[in-house]
Image (cartoon, rainbow, N blue to C red; front, side, top):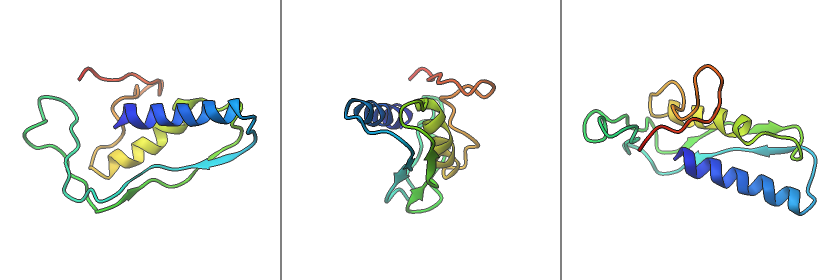
Length: 108
C-alpha cells in the first residue's frame, strides 16, 4: 500500500511540474469498502493476527500543500498513510523511519 500511494503521489507531483501547474494544492488518500480486510504488515503476521480495518471506508483528512513546486513527496505521503494505518489499529506507517520520517520500506 505504501509503495502504491507514494509512487502515485510522486507521479502526480511530477506531472504537475511538467505541465506548469504551480501553487498550493490539497491532497487526500482513501481506502473504500475495506471493512474486515486485513493489512499485511509482514510475512510473520500475514496469516495470523493481521490487523483489520475498523470501518468500511478509511478516508484520511485533506492535507494542504503550500507549493507544488517545492513539496517533498514523503512530507505528503507519510502523514496520510499514518492515518490510514491507524484505521487498521497500527500507530503509524511502518515504511517510514520513526525518528527521521524518511521513507524506509521494509523487506517484503
